[in-house]
Image (cartoon, rainbow over all chains, first blue to last red; front, side, top):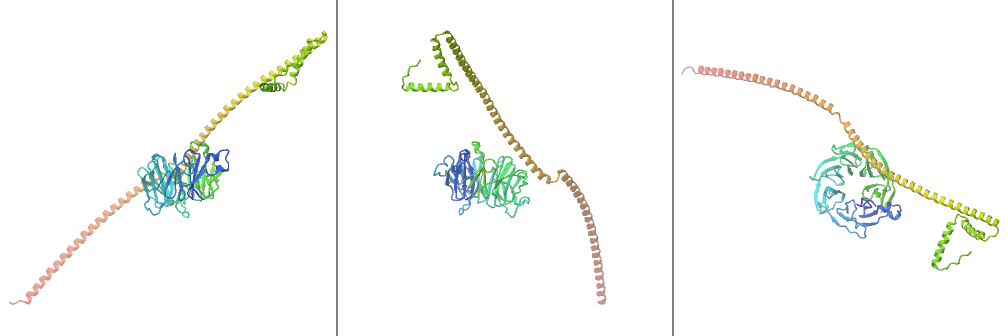
Length: 317
Length: 214
């Protein structure tokens, strides 16, 4: 089994995980972290069948869980999700150019300022869907191969997308156009032709961006489009995120890597899966006692790191 | 002297239990205080009924000593009670102090956590600065580049001047050659014309000689 995606509930007490069979499991973080946790607390509270294909990506709004995988995005209500026989609230499919094959959706991104959702995946376009009405407002074209990952730049309403074609493109949502392109594989500091040029993971911190995958994991300064630091790890990274003054990354190889912006490896914490695909930091203010890092990947286990320095325990599908 | 045996019904059984419990408690370390008081009562009655003066006096003395013993133990118990009260107060005070210091420590921890976050932000900013500075160092200094640009500009101007002057010279030569060539052509034309005229004259003369007498 492979767990592709995770999402934390708005109350901070539950974690949803989606696997490659199309099932979603809801774990209770507060029960698993409490002092009377038993073995059953580390099992899911419910699992249900969500999609016909793998659940590649999930995000949570303040009331809904949105999951996507096989070309459709479905919305579930968090308040109802723990009851048996939960049905999806709605399902939408973005307007694809060909109706023959339905491309998969690899990444979802919430844009809170305009209350919309961005979907990207196999058809090389970014679709914007308004969450109130469910209509698809924009289709941003520019990538020449499918899109793996999305990131939102807070200060200016820009979206970054990275894909198989090796380019990170910045899109301005107000004018619905591509404003900047960074072709990562063309820079010799970070390109690794033997791995390919695909961009597997993307994270941004307004002025800075870190991306990795085929090319090495690199920190970029966005305004000058220059790579500033290359992180010395050979394995391609599949998920990266900024946290306080660190950059956390995970990929092939079972460890979660903690990097400082200067390129030094501060810590390498082993998880229990042979390869990691997704990291999730529970920073919901409503549940400060459940503030943990969870990691999942090529196994049925979700590792929980209570203190970033070591793996506390694992929950299992 | 015996007290009448009390009526044994449910209420009084309950009261009796209480009384018995209290008396057992009270007589815990008294070890005979109760017995002493009973003895005192008995000896008082005996003394009242005693006959001789001496016996009475000695009994009286004995009763006084028993009384003072009772007083002594009572005084001791009172002091112990006082001491316990004061210990309780002391413990209350210490408890409150510890509570205060716990609250203070909590506040300090929160403060320190904020400071850590701040320090982390500062460290992150410093590292970002370092990263950008490294990139900038790779590029050469702006002053030097400007100077190089100026020098190159001057060279360019100089060379274009030279080019202009050479071109002018070339034009002049070309024109001179053109004038020369056109004069040569004209001379050729004039010479050819002269030749033709002289040819015509010769043929006219030969024609007149061939046909002299009409």
